[in-house]
Length: 281
Ligand code: NDP
Image 1: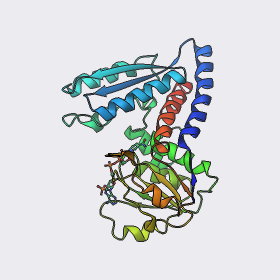
Image 2: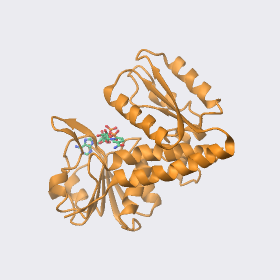
Image 3: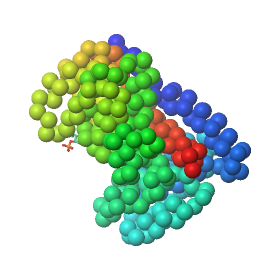
């Protein structure tokens, strides 16, 4: 039976440390650390994520600036808001909640955020620095949280075979780069991968981010592996991950639950990136 990695508890501990740092920042600078959160349109899942992020800011003594823009907003208007926030001394981090409506060019919009205020770590400069192994970049929140979760198990990443299933820009690619930076031997799988099961079965560390309910089953997991489930899928029973938790938990050594695993860490790391941004200005 696997040990359950309690992402919620680890995230709470990180947030209590952030409260201390953010309060010290306020005492020193006479203003709070600030995070601007931009939401476009009425996607219900995005509304929940944004609400959680704003609530988490309050808990950590971070001031949030919330912008809800109309679904039909023009790229130019969104970009002009970003420029305004880039110049605002009270704003240390800027987050544009994804996905954006189809008519908006996501990459173009994200590239307008000043890299030092890029709380999500999606800017090309930050992503590029991560891949080059350069210090001083903002690392994307979900991958940063995943590394913390793996480290919390006490399993040494160095030399392990880490398999990442999914190659998105926000999870798969950056977590592969981080695992590599931590000296894992990394294999990245995706929808065209042949013999996926053969590869996942050889994983000491398995990170799954594909967006398909309970896709990874026990027969695909090596006994004793660290299994990190990034998936957040809504089905008739509520929220579930990309891993068949009930089956896999009897085979893995460590496993993250959904909810209560990667999700809370993503929020904690967003706040951590914001506080780091304020400290290094
Ligand atoms: P994307 O849809 O951007 O990417 C999915 C990836 O999975 C693609 O690379 C795709 O391959 C791959 N894939 C799809 N089907 C298969 C398959 N059958 N076998 C192998 N690979 C497959 O997803 P995201 O990375 O944005 O998100 C993944 C999941 O993680 C979602 O459930 C999302 O909600 C969740 N998520 C959770 C977060 C959290 O904080 N907990 C944060 C971000 C995401 P290809 O490239 O070939 O199409």
